[in-house]
Image (cartoon, rainbow, N blue to C red; front, side, top):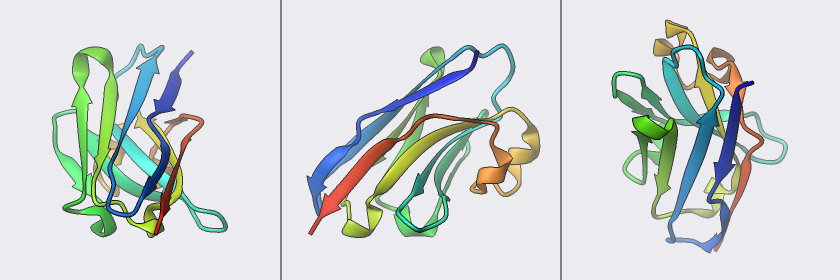
Length: 126
């Protein structure tokens, strides 16, 4: 059974940093993309950052220059380093995995992803 478990969320002041991790297990197939998404109350889930199986990364405009996605391939663990956090970054953050190369197009769209974690809360105070 595929499992994605996020960790590393918390509460920080604006300008602070957090590092999110996603432990993935139960895979018997290729993962074409792994991504981080977020959802604030009463808002739709949005893509934050994605890493393709061959290493390319994609970021939402709102986090470019502040967030960095990376992947420890041996441990199937994608990380999200978040710096210069802003109150508008407050949301539940989810890790997701796509098992089709369809994710290479529109990789920040939640509909491209097949498996999701339960989420980790990030709260940024001003």
